[in-house]
Image 1 (cartoon, rainbow, N blue to C red):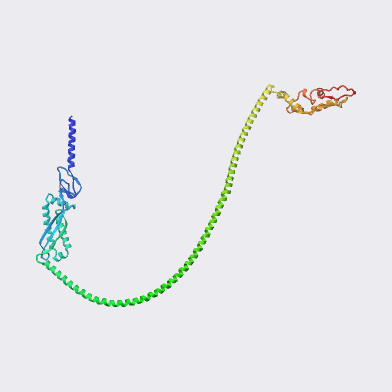
Image 2: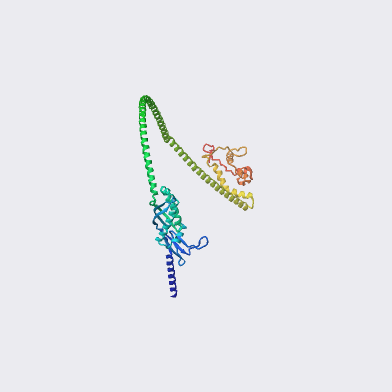
Length: 483
């Protein structure tokens, strides 16, 4: 609970402090100068400043050590009824005027106003300013002559402003405007100057009038003389002008006719040139039209003949390329197939030869490593095929009937004609012994038809079939045998 009270007290103190600080932040309006005094800093010499002036803006006023007041910038207008001011000629003049002053906002001058006018009411400020203006105006009048004051009023006012403003700045004021109402004197000097100026002006005016009258008469005579001269000259000039005008008219008519003829000639020539140019342009246009027509016909012919032929040519070329590509692919495929087929056949033949070699090796091994016996076994195994081949050689011979006319006697070798015929027939077949000879073997004796086996040729002939003679027919002659 005590802690809560402490927090509330701290918050209250902070709030009050903030409120006080915010109240000490002061803003200066534009029609015033805020003068901050107290401890406001030090000057260049190290001493303390008496005040710090702010025109516009704002500043924080530290409590206790600083305070502030405002100086009003409202202008003060005062009527200065200056009487008996002594001029440089020791002639007293009166110069009632109106002065407008105010507190200056110039840096350095504001500090003077803060030091000398802060807290003084406006009437007292007005009184101080009037005293300064009275004194400085008398000083300025004492340095000038009445003629200068009357003749050069602007210089007089400028001298017053320069003299008065220097003194006003010392108390922080600025001279805003000066208006001199009138300038008079007690001795009538200014009035006399006025009369003298008026008389001088009147005399000068009369003189000017007389001179103008004289100048008028002289001018009138000169004008009349000038009038006559100019009239005569004008008449002569008129006659001369008339003659010149006639000459100009004649020249103008001649030039007109010449120009008309030239214009007509140029017009005719221009018309002919334009006509020729038009014909030329027409011919050129027709030529261009014919050329365009020929180009269009050529383009049409090209589109109707050349383009279809080119398209057909390209189509044939594309078809030929496609066909060639297809043939090439088919040939490549067939070549690959043939290669694979031949490779397969080669592998098959190799396997057959390998198996045959293995079989031959087995046959030779079974024959006791005797090549002769192994070959005999193989021929024995192939004997039916060999016989079938021998039979195939003569099976197509068409022998319906064989008639043998044989005599009772034999030949030189003791063989009958029939025996010799059969022996020749057997000899016409491919002998088997040649096959055995090429294989390095010999036929068995039972198959040796050449007579080289045991028994010789006669033994071979013993195995040949014999023909028994037929019985004689009823005529007592022998009939031929029919086989």
